[in-house]
Amino acid sequence: MQLGSLSLHLLTREVQLDAVRIDLTVREFALLEYLLRHPHHALTRAQILAAVWPSDTEVNTTIVDTYIHYLRTKIEEHPGAPVVRTIRSIGYMLTLPPGEGEHPSPERGASTS
Image 1 (cartoon, one colour):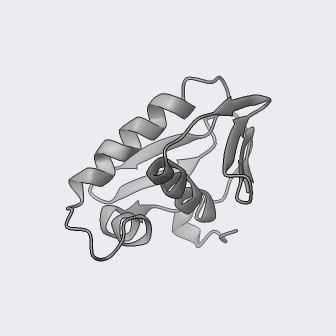
Image 2 (cartoon, rainbow, N blue to C red):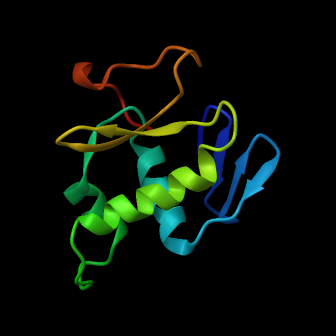
C-alpha cells in the first residue's frame, strides 16, 4: 500500500518513507493501514475505533486521538510525507501535503484503494 512517499508492506509489517524505515507499534500499524485503505476520505472516530480496536476492548473514541498523535509524530516529521488532517466535528483524513499533486475531493465520492 502506498500514498506519496509512504509505503506500508502488509506481509513484512514494515513502513517506509522513501528509504527510511518507520517503526510503529502493532496498533499504530493497524491505524495507518486503515487510513491508507481510505485515502482522502474523512473517517469518523467511531469508524476508526471499530476498524482498529477489537470489539471486546472497552475503549472510547478519545483513544483514536491519542494514536493519531503518535502516528503524526512518527510520520509527519519527514518532508513530503502524507499528513493526517483533522476534519472538524468528523474525525481524520490521510492525504498528501499541500502542493504534492492532485487528489480527489472526499465530498465528490473519491474511490478507495
